[in-house]
Image (tube, rainbow, N blue to C red):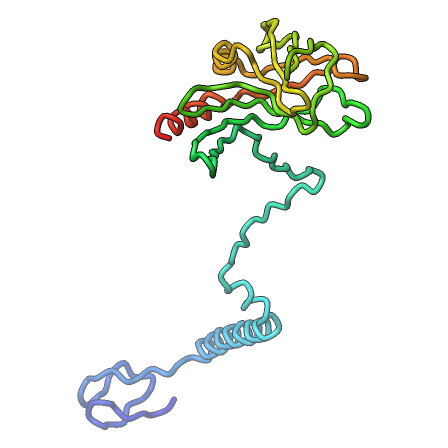
Length: 245
């Protein structure tokens, strides 16, 4: 048994007494050894857990930092298929062209509409292996005319010689319609003209292509195919120019 001071009056009171004999206040109770052991055990558990966490954090600090970084998603990249060949752009399709001319001596004005170049459907032999042709329409203040122009003067066998020119009897196929026609060629000229130009212009307006047959000397039958797409616009343009010129 031990004595302690009363917290109220200072009187010495036995630790086993229920209250102070002088003022009646209850004396402070001593903490039992069991409680101290429990407190020490709890403190030990807490200390051990804290130490283990610090060790784990120091060893894995880089991993933890990486997990805390924001995840940035990379944009998906579509790799081109190298096995596929790139699509080649086709060159623009040739079309009809127009031009004008004015005689320096007389001042007379004329306009022309010309088809894209046409080559023989089967290449001719020398000296005509590079020959090409175009179908043209010309106009001036006096009228219109239709002709075939060639890079080399045609040497034809199906032609009747006339005074100053040759009369050619041949065939032209407008789309799927075959027509027998008469054409004229001045001696040695690179141009063959339609005799019936009105019918020729009408066919040019209404057809998509024309196939000309010629009996070329030393070449048997020769065929030139002309593209007529865009001809109507070109003809209308030169007619407008000629009406003003």
